[in-house]
Picture 1 (cartoon, rainbow, N blue to C red):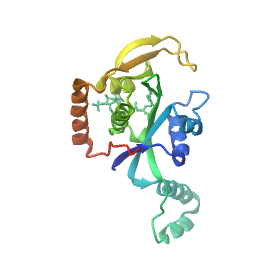
Picture 2: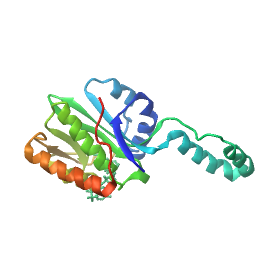
Picture 3: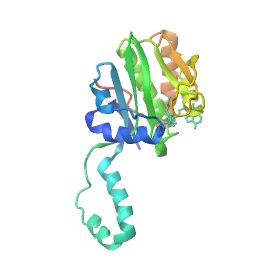
Picture 4: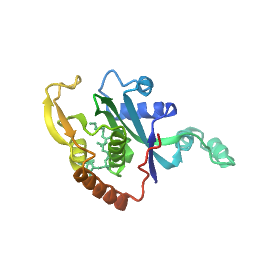
Length: 214
Ligand SMILES: CC(C)(COP(=O)(O)OP(=O)(O)OC[C@H]1O[C@@H](n2cnc3c(N)ncnc32)[C@H](O)[C@@H]1OP(=O)(O)O)[C@@H](O)C(=O)NCCC(=O)NCCS
């Protein structure tokens, strides 16, 4: 598996919405990514598995399903497929922020369940930090559920610190949100910390593409 990051496109919306629903099933109303993509404030990125296309994943799933009922026919169809199907890149995670008053506010961040704990969250966060810096936002902030140890640990690793609490912030269960912020991301000390993390990430997960062509 080789993972890359790029800006989100229109064609990603269905996959991103599915990942969002999987990660945040109780959040209502769901985020409208059509609208987000049109907003001049919003900046979204996706991580995709460069070895996989959506059609192939769908074909595998369809083959599994069809095999249960029509084993013989489905085998015939797929055996006779001369060329592998081609299609959209397979999105494995996404993240986005809004830039308001010069500050980047992370709105959404999720990785497909089977792809978690494989460094994709880090890949996305590194890319978001680089993108914020490129857009001249040197402070990044977000809200995270107090009961989300995975996200809390990821953000802490990258220098975010708790700067406040929003009581009863989440509408589904009235859970508190921890406000986490990292400042001065263009400072020499933060960049040094980030470079160490990028190197460790590349060493652990192989070379990944961080650059976001805008
Ligand atoms: C939070 C999330 C994005 C992390 O993505 P991921 O691809 O699994 O993360 P990575 O594999 O890159 O892990 C990076 C770091 O995150 C933390 N982390 C990730 N999963 C963790 C877990 N289950 N428990 C504790 N720490 C965890 C660790 O600090 C880890 O660093 P380490 O490998 O040095 O321990 C993912 O769990 C997710 O999509 N969760 C559901 C949606 C969500 O909660 N989003 C955040 C909203 S604020």
